[in-house]
Amino acid sequence: MKSRETLISLAEASRRASKILTRGASSELGTGAAPTFEDLTEALHFALGDGRIWLNDQRMVLMQSLVLGRLRAEIIDAFGTEAAKAIFMRVGYMQGLRDAELIQKRFPNEDLTHALAAGPRVHTLEGFVKVTTKHFEFDGTRGTYFGEFYWDESSEAAEHIASYGLASEPVCWLQTGYPSGYTTQLFGKPVIFREIECAGMGAKRCLVVGQHADAWGRDAPEREYFGLEWKNRRSYPARTVKTQNAEPVAGPDGDGIAVGVSASFVRTRLLLQKVAETEATVLFVGESGVGKELFSNQLHEMSRRAKGPFVAINCAAIPENLVESELFGVEKGAFTGATSSRPGYFERASGGTLFLDEVASLTYSAQGKLLRALQERKIERVGAARTTHVDVRVVAASNVDLAEEVAANRFRQDLYFRLCVFPIAIPPLRERRDDIPLLMAHFLSTYSKRHGKTVTGFTRRAADALLKYDYPGNIRELQNLVERGVVYADEGGQIDVIHLFAGSEPLPGFTVNLSREGRLGFTPFDLTRSLSGGGSAQEPVPFEDVERQTYQAALTRTKGNVAAAARELGISRAKLDYRLKRLGLATTA
Image (cartoon, rainbow, N blue to C red):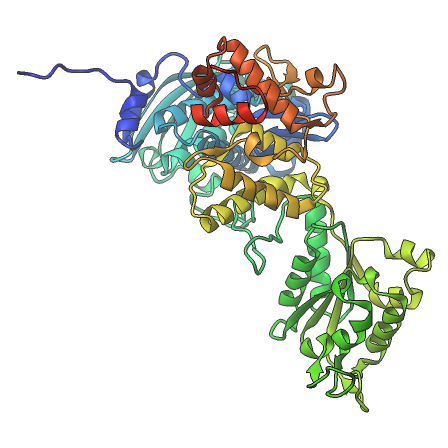
């Protein structure tokens, strides 16, 4: 008996084939195929008062179209049309590539057809042009792609007409580069788009066509514009830039990280590079948890003393009566119990770097002994009759303002000037939020490997919370939050807010995002206003209150059906039962 032929959806075919679809076309997509505009707008957040706009974990900026048009005109006038065209196509290409990476990260389970279909929506969301898909199809096995798209209301065409009038050739260079970069990143092979009709030439709307690079022939100038080939490096030199997706430089334990992209972090890094090759004493100043020891280790690795030892000591951990023996060593028989001679930290670090953390915690008498060692470069072991020369570079760190400690007579002024030859202030994490996505990805990878778990990433709510949180414990606290999330999250799942904040930390106020109507509004999960009696949305709220409200709302919507509420929340029935019982919300049968 013949089996009945069954029709299945594209998404189901993708699941059955383990998401490996080598062919696809836009005609196979259903109406409202994910990710929809609503899905994408949920990724766009406005951190009001914080000076940042986020598209998932990528920082965005708002810029007037008029300003971009003016800049475009000045580049054309200064360098010519061809150079301007190459520059703007390259910028658009990089923008499209980054947005494709965003789609891959935020919607990792979507097949290639759906991911390609999301490109026009992201492009439209960013405000440059309204994109309508006419048709696209691809065959990954054969390496072929073909697509046609309509563009309406191109801001680039409008700005060109305002500056130069109607053009004799297509002028939407930035927008042409965008789908080229986006499709190339997803398809895995070079795809080049060209504008066939352009509103800047008087057409009603723009029409663009994209094909795999070989279909355009070998003389396609876009290959050079997009960096696929560089025929003339003098005209368009390529430069390798370390981006947020670059492999981070980890500390000795694999947890720390000494790389970033924020302006404040880059300034700190440049200061480190300036002083590394010298013998100057360096004083690191910053809050607890910002990575002062890690920076000190990096300084050592960059210096001429890199082959020597790096010895770190926490001055706050040395008992007052043992400071001298710990720093300078002790001779056999110097006191009761000294059964053998022992070198101190200065001798152990000879030829390398000695890192003195929390130096402000040393007693006044201990500060005097340290000053003498720094000035004379000689030490004397406890109970010894001779001095020993030491070749060591001293790097100190403090989480308090030493100048204020000097003014309060708690720190020696002469020692302060001896240590503060080259001060470097390390900014707290809340002042370098652009580095948070990089740190999140690094710690997620580190702890997933360490604990043997597969965690696919962070939910929108979790990423939103981590970007907004103030981190009183700085990088160390972010590190702990991510490790907690990896341990708490389900195998093969994502880290959510409930996996990060255990109850002792106040839940941060969520950023503002776009509503369906295109207006700024708070996300549905932001319950700070209702829980604080109508107070400010930035007011921190205990997470337990938010968790209780979330479960109560889910139970209300499902009319008390716990299983349905669990499905809605994306957790198992057993987990929801446990959490309801813990919060005192469980109902008796």
